Length: 88
Image 1 (cartoon, rainbow, N blue to C red):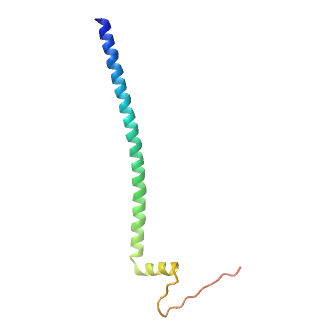
Image 2: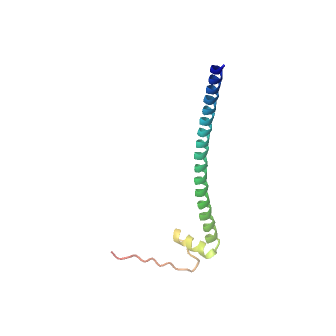
Image 3: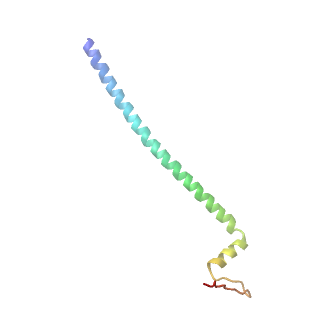
């Protein structure tokens, strides 16, 4: 009778230990996923702020014209362009 109880307790301890091990593995995996998602969220929030800043900047027609002129050879009708070449 005493041997049967010891065997039963040993089996219960082994099963519980196995379950705790599986729970720990799941917890570790979920923690890694959570950290990765938090990092990605932070990155996307920064990108969103940059885009909102650009939208605010380019919503001003003067800034839009200034950027257009700096990227292309755009000029208004009647406007003259001066090109300064530095000496070496």
